[in-house]
Image (cartoon, one colour):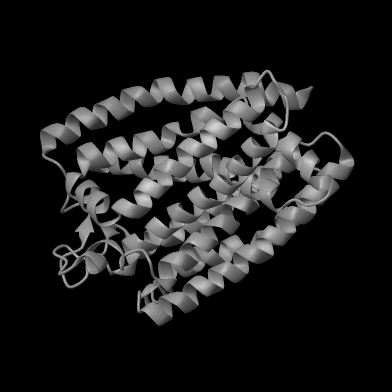
Length: 336
């Protein structure tokens, strides 16, 4: 049953990066829009996100619940060592959700909409950055189980060049996914061409920021470079993710919207797969100590059994319901 729980954990992380990441990326894309494009981008983001954006956060909730129940040692260490970025992350999520709700559903449309839009866009960037920052902190090897002082215990693990570079990379990755997905939601050819250009620009930014992550890893001695180039699976997956980029541009040029979305989702899967291949089953790298893994931090078997069955049964409710939600609010709209 432990492997069942791990499977649902990995799937939840992937789906949150794919669906929630597209939502966060949409806010970043809106933030970078300029001139006449800004209002068109804002309207497209609102129309695209409004029906389903709240459902996407379900995967984050499932991830947290799994960590809390199945891997309490990991949950505890992360909550303590990364308390500051986690709090900032949660504040950003609340501000972002509140701003989007008031912007889209407020009955009175006035200058306050501009304030809501700014909060939504900037918080999308901040939340994504802190997500990446936390991921970088988990694998940087700077988390200390028994810190000697406040700085070592609560600042150094996340405030470093490597973690910051991962945060920047995640911003470009989510922006790329959002750009590709928004192409299919645009109804005007001019807007569609505009987002194809955005997708190409974010791809270039993603590649550059990915290179910066490797450089920062070398500077901070986070061993990502060594692990990556010594693991054939991670190398293979990243090569595949790179090779399918020309295919993506061809499908976008031919107007094959859903095929391009599948390719973008596959690229995310390849990137996460390369990451998993390097570090699995380690979740938290501890400085001068035993790393916390999905095996040495697992809860008792009785807990895993209850949780595993709950996830299995729940999946037969969640996945059909999510598909039905998309069919009503997304698929039908796009067909029309």
